Image (cartoon, rainbow, N blue to C red; front, side, top):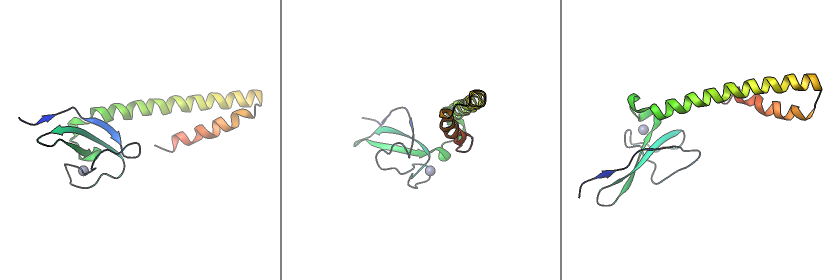
Length: 110
Ligand SMILES: [Zn+2]
């Protein structure tokens, strides 16, 4: 019986931890940030983890797509925020203040 490896899964240490989080590339524990992991089977079965930074550049497609859609989302939300401001300024609706305040944070938490 040879080794069998499943496709990589992508995750973030803030959202989810799984198994013993030691990077197979650098040997350090993954404590935060993006990482990928996959189940692999030899005699016992184990999880292999890798820091995002330790994954070769040519295998970063997933994260590139994530970064791209996050950028698009933020741009859209900023546009939305501006529309909310326009609405508030025109209609003097105090209820929108909270919403706008919340959206102000978007451009900072990159
Ligand atoms: Zn690493």
